[in-house]
Length: 240
Image 1 (spheres, rainbow, N blue to C red):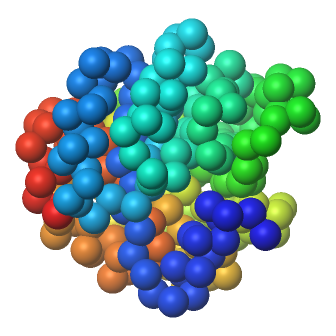
Image 2 (cartoon, rainbow, N blue to C red):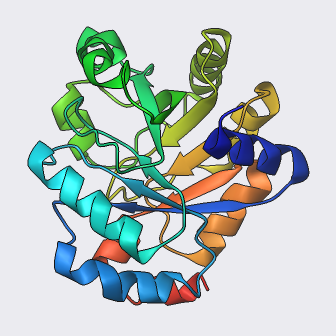
């Protein structure tokens, strides 16, 4: 079984809590990567996610290559577009926006990625991506031209996630969106985690250790932080 996914699956089964930092090449200068990873070394971060909704494809290769020089943590692509791929990473979350009905992000982007991926050594992890209302319009919503599921529709979120598992997804990513005012509620995380047998990742709007721990307690195997770090680089120290 693939290495990165195997670790996530084992973490779910053992109760280990994983923490990923999402780095957006549009928001972090390559020159700042070494100083960032000097802080990450003393943190609880276990994975590095790289990607964004509008990243220039030409930036990805250099960005990931510099990260690789500065860390031994697994680097996982979290692309907003099929062009945001590079062999320099370890794995790819092969995302399908199952909460939306825009075929471009359900299957079209994935088809376009095949030409690169069929000869790639990247570990490909099929991931069901569920966009949940975080209280504001996010870049994901704008780019994908889909609407998030309201947080009050817990049953719909759960059945959407479970349909993703039935379709063969290996992970479900519950996403409130970058810069969300409200993170995914613990009621949602708990409902989804109880229904699924695959690991659940939660991201969007998580800015404090208390929010992170609440997500873990509700059943998340992995939490992703991004905007909190972008707004204040010292935030990473609170996760040490």
